View: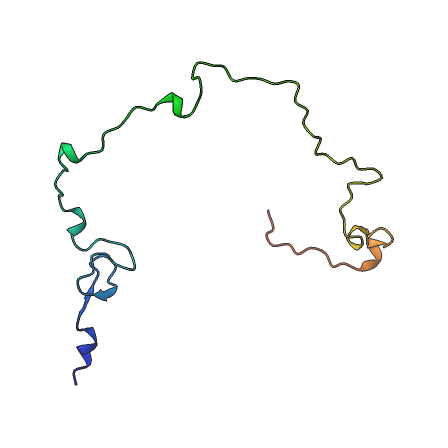
Length: 121
């Protein structure tokens, strides 16, 4: 048994080297086109087969295309707002707002001095 028989039917992408089935037109890894079948020249359809553009008829979307858009100032719009009372804008979770350094003497904490990483001369 030939150990290299596992590579039968495979080809390598010329750009990234990924192994792929022979005959694939595009590399599954990098997306490079390996053949030029996608870029073949196709014949232009005859003029008779092309779709002819028809001009839009304004009567299909308006009764009178020369009329102005009516502005109706008398229409009352329902007020969708809700009046709130007695509320505030404090959205905290409660315990997060406690200042823990308020009642602590910082000198009594015995904090070591900061480390000097670079001394300038």
